[in-house]
Length: 251
Image 1: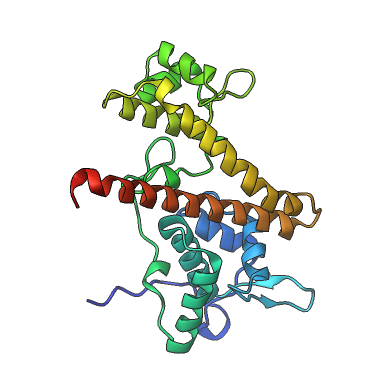
Image 2: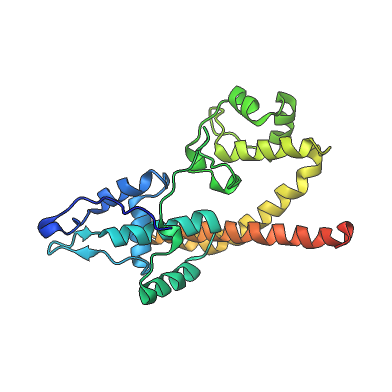
């Protein structure tokens, strides 16, 4: 079934007008609240989109450019695809002339903490921007105060001065509350903290040289590298656990 055509404002001669990078950001922010101008510049530097340039050097984006950006951001958010794979898909788009399915915007229900139902903890948007006090964290996670205190003692949950908790703290607290329903106690989770610290050490070796550069594009590349490493780590961990449980399940 064909989708209804999207109404776009007409420019000179009836052609859709070109947009500035700020206007593109406004178009994307409704579906991707964490996107930034630095992110758009980074995707351009990686060759995923090629906006036109005015004589003065300002970027001008077409609606096709916006569609490409939607596809890239959707593939990263929903499928955790690395840029190499996304670039290959865009190359097929250029050859076939068909807009990838993932570039079509969709309206989704967003929870009070920025999460999209069905996408899990990885979809929490800009978790560092979430600010919860202790009472809010307890109420939203389902943990009791003593269990939260134990998680903090073990280093599983960390607050920012003067006692604020971010979105990741909420994700961790909710996960622990869920595991508690199966009989897990905070002391059983020390291994998660140890394993995470090992990964942080490995990933930091790759990301730190980029962070130290003054070039904004390098910092954007550092953030992108960290995002891909975390996504790949999650996939690897989940697969290893599934494989390990097969004998127990008799499969």
